[in-house]
Every structure is written in structure tokens, then in C-alpha cells.
Image (cartoon, rainbow, N blue to C red; front, side, top):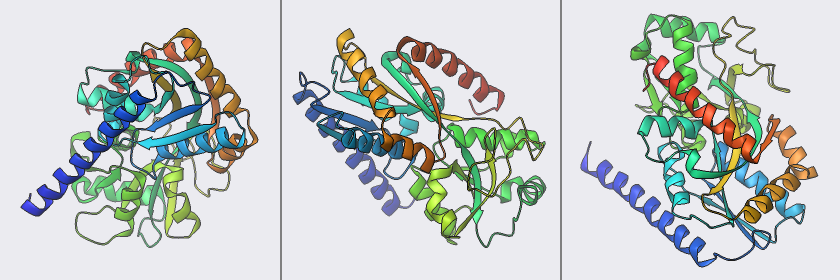
Amino acid sequence: MPRRQVTAALGIVLVAALAATAFVDAARSGQGQAARSNLTLIAPAAAGGGWDLVAREAQQAMRTGNIVNTVQVVNIPGAGGTIGLNQLAGLSGEGTTMMITGTVMLGGISQSNSPLSLQDTTPIARIAEDFEVIAVPADSPYRTLEDLLVAWKANPAGLPIGGGSAGGIDHMVAAQMAQARGIPVEQLVYTPHPGGGELTLSLLSTAAGTVGVGISGYNDFRDLVEAGQLRVLAVVAPERLEGVDAPTMDELGLGSVDLVNWRGVVAPAGIEPAERAELEQIVREMVGTESWDESVDRNRWVRSEIYGDGFGDFLGTEQTRIDELLKELELA
């Protein structure tokens, strides 16, 4: 890698590390404050991605519903969400912080062999399911998913697929598609991006090293799809997404491509039972607001709520499922 690129990369890492350290110091200084007074939501990814969107929508619902006096969103990107998870682990016993999580983080934990898992947090709630789409630039020669799959099988190395972090749900969907069409997974050329914003920039660019096919949550592409700059070829969902003119994988005979990206919230380990109950109640009130109803409709999410110990049980079985799937897909 050229020296300039190395320097830039190190600068990004340093900025992220300093931001994370500043966040932990600030959070620790606020210990003892009630969550109703001052709540922090960690989005363990860059601004503009799916976790960030969930955090911002939750923030808005809490504000407009007068549920929390002050709620701030802090972005801690990197490593499939595991950097954010590490920062959360440093806030043990701090009951005024929650972190957005989901399927991507389970893949990040498995891929990185992280010593931490979501079992090292306090489970609060699963709140929604989000759906993946396969998108290309509007001027792409691939008019249908079948066009794409035919070209991909003919030359797997010549068709890089872009998405989020390595081992995350975007990567797993790409591997599932490859398996479904008899493309060896080891020939899959997958290009990870730190967030949805970076992925869309790559899709719209003609520069060397960019990608012509992207896999991500619909909302990462929504604005550009609605503006006519990107086109959705297929959705990974049980039913078509309202307002999105694209078939499901089942309709295309690819029912084995079936990963759903759930969204949830966890708190640091070691909080008091009363603090956990308060955080659960805050989330229950948040998902009951008109603002949250509007965000679910706008973002084409599906409600999928589980609270407390039930969510904790789900996290355990889901991590096992993702670990096994990554091995099956030869990604771990």
C-alpha cells in the first residue's frame, strides 16, 4: 500500500480511537444519572448506515414522545460493530447507555474471534427486522438478477460484490447467492465498506477499485433508488417491499437466500435490575409512539419485538446459528 494511503488509514484509526475514548470518558462522568434524564445510544458504525438510522429514528421517537429529556447518538464504527461492543464492555454497571445491534454484529464477533459476545451485555429488546436488497447503478448492463447471476458465474473474479463488513449479513447474502448458483464461494470477490454511504459512493463511481453491484439494507440505497440513480434487482424478504419494484428471492427460485437483518438494543453488563427494567420500559414506550410507527413504514421495516430474557435467549441461539452459517458458507 502506498505510504500516503497507509498514513490516511492510520489517521482514520487514530480518530476513531480518540472518539471512542472521549465517549467512554464522557459516559463514565455521567454515571448515576437516570436514563430518563440523559440517555446515550451507541451506533456501532459510521453515520449513514443501518445501525445509525435505527439510532436516529429511536432518538427522534424518544424526543417527540417526551420519553427521555436528553438523548444523544454516538457513532463508534469498525470491525462489524465489535469496536462499539468493546467500548460498551468498558461501561459495566452504567445504566444510561444502550447500543444498537443486529445480525451484522454476530458475524463480526464470529469473524474476529472476539473474546466478547452479546452474552456479555444486558439484553434489552429486539425491535424490528430490516431487509437486504441487491442493487446496481441505473446504467448497469444487468437489468435483472438473472442477468447478474449469469455474468457472475461466467467470471466470478471479474465481478466484485460490495457490501458492509466482512462476515456481516451482506457478505453472507453474497455467499448464499453464490452457493445457490453453483459459484464456488472461494471465488467470491467481496469488497467490504465501513458504511452505507461509502458503498453508495463506490457504486456510483467509475474509478478503479470500485464495485458495480451492492448488497445492503434497502435504506442504505433508498434515496438513490428513488432518485433513479440505483436500481434494485431483488429483495431478500418474505414478501415484496411496498413501493419497491423488485422480486423476492423466493419468486426468483432462490429461496435459500433468506437472511433477515434484525435490529435490537443492549445495555452494558452489570446494571441494576431496576435500571434494566427502566431501559426496557423506555424502549416499550418508544416503539409505541407515532414517530416510531412512521419510521417503520418509511424504512420498510417489520416490527419484531422481544424483551428482556426472551431477547437474551434469542441472542444465544442466533449467535450459534450465525457461527454455523459462516462455516457452511466457508467464511469462517
